[in-house]
Length: 333
Image (cartoon, rainbow, N blue to C red; front, side, top):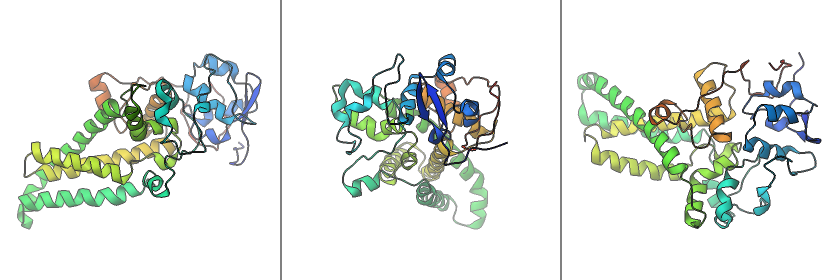
């Protein structure tokens, strides 16, 4: 079976216009193998029959041959006309007012510049590998400090190890709750169009990720703001948790955070095996991004979505999804 070369075009037609979606195949929420059979064909009826989201129709504009154009359906307004993508975005979003929330949840496939100053811009861009390089050593330092506080000899350390292990595990569980809580009640707070400050805060901490979900430079949390959150958590832990255990629990929380950020990066850019845990979480997170913004707040786990009633129920599929640009000629069922 012939695969699609990376530099090949993958043209489809929608309402008589041609779109080259080759660059989108690896990111398509439904997988590249589900669209493979539609190369050089009309997808108008198929998109309508499959109830594609408003975000899907909006995103399709990015790939029109000759430049963006209106998609003639019920969602016709092109919101990119209200900003200038050639200028830093941070100084523009506050002026969007009531249009902001609709704009930020209308995804595009491009890179975004936040600040004009190169130092500030650099602080907002984070390669994925910086997260484990920075935070895993810090986590183990906390665990070490907490351990020697409780057990200073080898024999005492051996006896203390079950408590240490449980404390680390408890810290990881605490992170999953923090992950859900931050994502739902902080990152997804709907800013009033009248509050420029709330728009800026929402956009900076999470809105930009929904606007440019394929920008790999902005998929993990930059170290500086992460450090501020870590400092707040350290203060809270030292205030409310047992003094002999809070550092170990804090180390577990940091390990949970590293796992979360690595999972988040992978489910955006990886191609997990069909039926695996990460496969399910990738489908789940895609639903959150492109269809159900007010549900599915768990990234590393669905557990708290179950507890708080925000679980997204994934549809059963005729065949497994593959997120790869090397599509095989699978028949769509």
